[in-house]
Length: 101
Image (tube, rainbow, N blue to C red; front, side, top):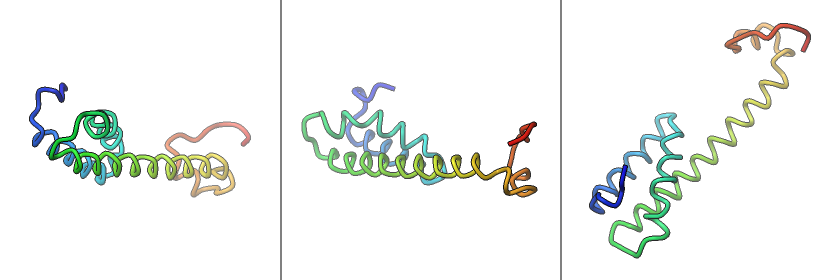
């Protein structure tokens, strides 16, 4: 998508949609929001909607970092303790690895 062709109001609307979409357990939308709108928020000359876009980009980045931290923590804990959890660990697994843990 070429953001250069969109008017500033539509850029703000699109940025807001991606920001709120990230709350639906879709942190990938926050990543897209940060990547697409970073230049609009921090590099381009000032315009009316830029302050709101900047706020959405910062919050999207913060939400994305939080998601990455939580997901990394969960994956680390699960990989480390799955075998000790016994049957519960097996029920939480999509595939059950064979062999000795």
